[in-house]
Length: 117
Image (tube, rainbow, N blue to C red; front, side, top):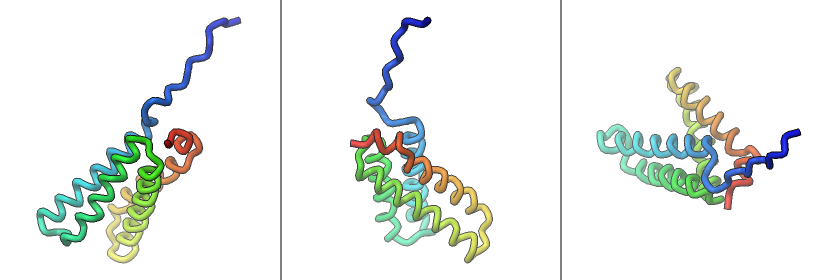
């Protein structure tokens, strides 16, 4: 028999998947800002970029509002990518759609929801 105690679960920081999703949200923010700077996106896109940045920050801090904002951002990014594929036949958008779908499904897992404050 092994008499060692079970290792304590580390609940101090975000789960690795949450950190990856926060990095993805920050990358979407920076890509959007780059699009605004290079005049490929309208200036109103800075509001969406700010929401992506806020979602990333809130998710890293494990706040419930950050989780909800990230969940909405992942879902809306997924639907936008599907719209790009259907309307404009941009097949590379499937990558964005699949990644955001995976992130959305990860965020609704019970282990992730338990970590939120």
